[in-house]
Image (tube, rainbow, N blue to C red; front, side, top):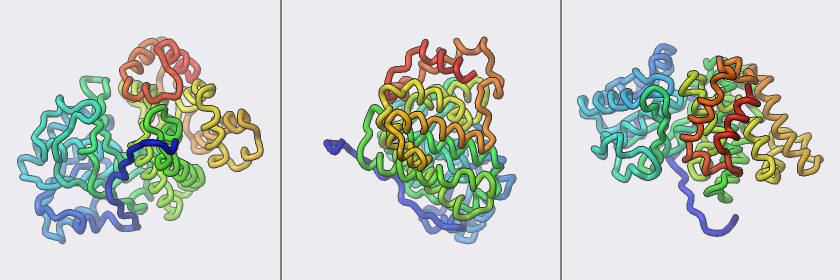
Length: 382
């Protein structure tokens, strides 16, 4: 574990209530592409940031057409808007979808590359435009990672994973998350916890620094998610959730996520289940599948989530982790079964087949997940 490894700390970070209104300080360019979605704009969350940019004399082109599970067509539309405006920097503002679009748009605008040429790992080798990312949810960790997930065709998700997609700055402003509905706070919070857990147990590239960040992230998230769901204006809880999600993002940018995410993506692609909820639904089942290979690591994480597990033996702690995570999801109001999101027995073969397309994630799992395993896991979650 202390042998040879590489680590990238990602973007520079600014964290403070109200920090979003001062993002003009972080970008020298006079013409900006501002990528968000209609929901974030409608809630007025980006008003302070836009006013600050206007007061600083920046020309802002607003692109707010990002949808959930953003499509390649949306990415290209954002690039075209930025190119037409002569944008020299990009701001991504919102949840994972606007930030994912902003990352790829900034890269394509700066490099001149074609989108179809950069899917995969380290296929984007050029230089993008300066980029600032501002999350409005505490979950995806997209502000911390060089990863963007794009929907290609009607259902398939493809990843762009390259160091060139790292933002220059990530800005954590807890005031932006005050108004998140409890179910969004819950789902995105569990998503961030999955990032930490999968980074800590990743079969590839796990290292002492990613481990330390994953454990700190899990501590912040597990200690604050119930409070943030119950009292959405609790600044301390909201700030802790944002920082936890960011640290988990840095961890999994270096020690990549695995089976939970691989099985979650088809639920988003085919049933439009929000990504965090998809992860929550599959988490206990994939952890159970991995138990033989990852028991020691799960046992190490268990007391972080539930200190009462400290005195148990290795197996008891590991199983206790799964139960503690399920209890958090239940306490936060998340459904536990796939049938609650429209999945039926007749869909299992399709989901298992689609999960096999996520080989870039499955190779990171502590033990193999073949198609018959995936089907059994979906069936267990049904």
